[in-house]
Image 1 (cartoon, rainbow, N blue to C red):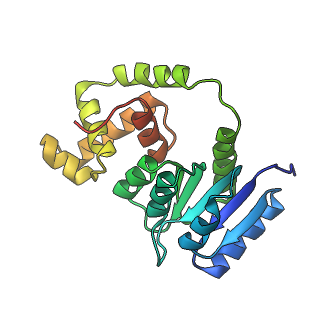
Image 2: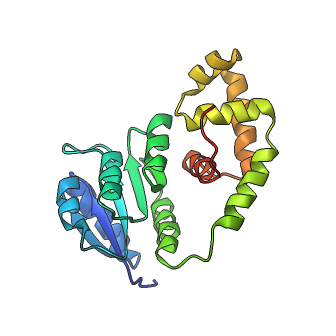
Length: 206
């Protein structure tokens, strides 16, 4: 078990969930701090420098996406992971646009969260440059067919498959096939990663 030099901030209004996540992460070598609400975390956020945020999506005072947006407005940038039991494409897109590193749907394997936190923490260290990464993403975008780009545009806009199918006058099944091809060509392991890559490369809805 490897100790880390940053704090994982858990924001969730449900105490059992907070404690369960804290136990998992503590046992995995992470330093953890719990916050019972988004507003509670925001009150302390100005003094937080090195850390990773793990927040629930649906909370009474504000959503996880609204929390990320509030942090950005306050000038506080933390690599963040949004967890939800109510995940859908529009929420994934909004979370990515608000700055989330990952979007994880319950139930999830412990290792999925742990790996997501480790990936997020990589942003805490000085990064040389993302130009090569963006260049690689743009090269993959150029490999997409016109129809695949249209489907990706719908995904980035937060549209469900049925809406994309209606707009393009094709079947939902055909949309699924194109979307799978896009995921493969873009080398994306998940929808959040695909959306994040598209946004990073400046690819937006048509």
